[in-house]
Amino acid sequence: MKINFKNILIALIEKEFKSYLRSINNFMNMIVFMIAIIILFPLTVGPSEEKLTLVSNAIVWIALIVSIIPTLDKIYISDFKNGWLEQYYYSPLLLEIIILIKCFVFWFFLIIPLTIFIPIFSILLNIPFLIIFWNIIIFAIGSLGFCLIGSICSSLTLGTKSNNLISPLLILPLAIPIFIFGNGVVEAVKSNYDPLPNLYLLITVCLILLIISPLISAYSIKIALTK
Amino acid sequence: MFDVLDFGKYNLYIWLSYSISFTSILIYFIIINARYKKASNLLKSLKNKNSK
Amino acid sequence: MINYLANPNRFLNFIKPIEFSIGVFSFLFIFIGLYLSLFNSPEDYQQGDTVRIMYIHVPFAWFASFLYFSISIASIFFLIWKHPFADIIARSIAPLGLIFSILTILTGSLWGKPMWGTWWVWDARLTSMLILCIFYFAYIGISNAFPRKIDGSKPAAILAIVGMVNLPIIKFSVDWWNTLHQPASIIRFDGPSINQEMLLPLVIMLLGFLFMSIFIILINIKTNLIYKKYQSEILKLG
Image (cartoon, rainbow over all chains, first blue to last red; front, top):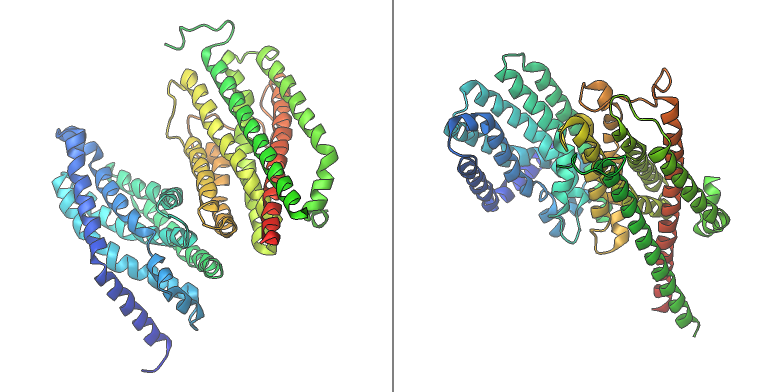
């Protein structure tokens, strides 16, 4: 096989996809977690429809976010342990580009399939169709930003004694703009305003992260490798 | 409930905020001084060992 | 000047004569400030006596964000010139900043209960202060999370620089969004809008807090330097 950029790219994506297929347990864990949260909320809030319609959108969001966060900080940890990251570091391809590909593959194969569950849960909670549509769009865009933030945090905590404690602390403050603008879109749709300005702001945040995150992650991976 | 409690001229909120903040700073100050003493003692004992 | 003081031994020699006077100054200013703010300042025509909480709330808030700013400046120095002393300075500032940010939130909610009627609102400035507090927690957590303590300093420095985004949001949040928190009244383009008799105790308190935080940070720096020396002595022993 000839070694050029395209072939390396395809090989990388294939390798990542296979590693996700082998650890399909993670994905099932996320789904079980989501279903547990969705069932627990109506039981604790009370089954009356008036109360549930106020918080139903928030329930779906919380279920998605809480189930993603435990997997976010494990983007690099297995690669770091079996030495793949070192190989990436010494390969002629820039580390930043590899990180970008890894984030995209993570987003495409692990997060995007979750969008199938948004309509199912939303129908269970009586959310109107227009808001379901916007929810899927916001989640698809915002979760890319989430993955990029997760890449920063997981690369910063490479080689720690126990990284489960710090990562949520790192992820939450950085992800707040995504929550705010995503909520802004839904609120605008609910009160019949134009949702596009908030959507553009959300896209802006994700684009800024798309530039910054690979640089920071590559820098901190280099630090982690030279220890 | 708190408004009923009368502490002379000022209400409870003022006293609480002043006392909490200054006692916590004082406690922190005592802790770092203890850390400093402990560290300097450690270094001294180690240096004595080394010179022997 | 910075080059001269970047050597730990020269730094220790430099601060030895002035350290005691900094401590005395901090006690003096804080005592005068306490007297002025509690007994010798006017009541606010709207808020009554409760306005006296401002004299500690504002210094706490200012120094919580200023200390974070200095941590990130020290981190930039550390990442660019790789000088270990900058890392020691950043590590020594962090716990004090954490305490200041927690106390800002505490005194703020004690002020908010009689004035606004609630302990807490999810308002822009309060939320951004809470995020600053979380950043302090994360900074301290990540700098101590590694088996060898030195390994944590570079990731922590990166985190400190990333968290700097939060500082302008704190500063301008009350001007950008109409919120419950009152707008800035001291640093403005058209001069301070605060009463002259209230400004004096506040300025004295701010000076006292400045000297106090320098004093505490100096003690922390000395302790951390001693631990560093201790480790090198152990290496010599082995």
